Length: 111
Image (cartoon, rainbow, N blue to C red; front, side, top):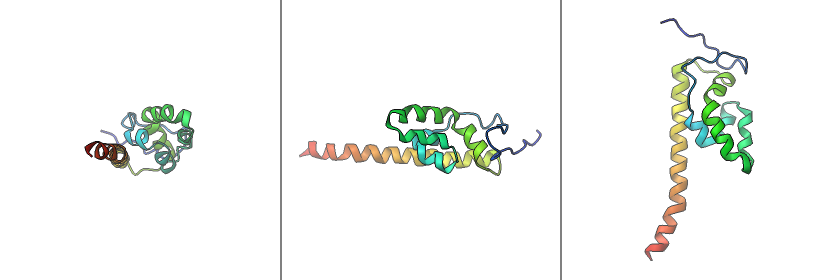
């Protein structure tokens, strides 16, 4: 198999390898924080309350491609290692937020 040219970090016109295309859980769960880290400035629209969920969906679908184009990565493999870490952190933040909201209610009900 021929090596794929690394076009990461070369901007909006850069070719995106097929291996990069796909859903991005970290971008979906951590929207604006993920966007800043990956130079995907349109992701900051998630800070506008009415656009938060819409932008999360857009980042879920397009985030991987935009991250590849706007941030330099050593390889496709390194890109996916980084994105997997973002997804795990996003999941952790979501679980922590849910526990923070639910546990006090459960404790009040137990009294």
